[in-house]
Length: 177
Image 1 (cartoon, helix red, strand yellow):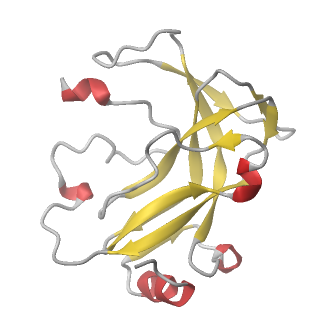
Image 2 (cartoon, helix red, strand yellow):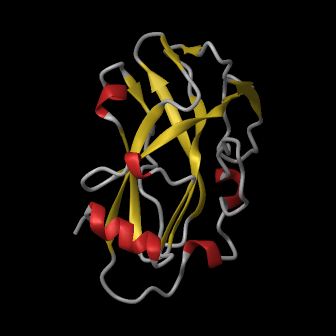
Image 3 (tube, helix red, strand yellow):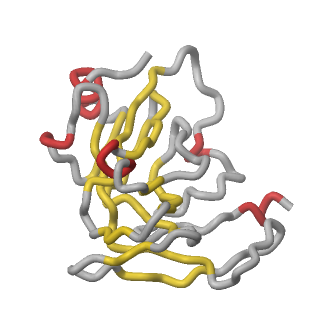
């Protein structure tokens, strides 16, 4: 079951969902709009290795925007910090962003109960597009959880993305080996 706007607001009041900064006008009927932060990152090496820590180069989006190019994976970050303690958050791109040919996640659209951080975005495009910091980029949709939870993400000792960051976080797949 997807949470309605009233249920999202109640969950925020109860501390079950945290969105910082929270702007009431970003709350939709059953979702919350999130915005692109000012940092992007690209991998330094052309060939990535799943067993190695692949380094990234930071890009700060200037005020007049930044043109992303096809064939490059850009890691972005949401402006909003979120916590979800009783529901499963899903991040989807906004239709206006999709109509520009921009994808905001390759595979990682689902969060875990207990995820507490900004969202790293896996941005790609099919033709060059100028993007801007603080532009609406996606929407969070919350699904109710059935049953008790034993293993919250923020309490897992082996969780790879618990360290709070204002910048995109590169793949930590290498920690699985």
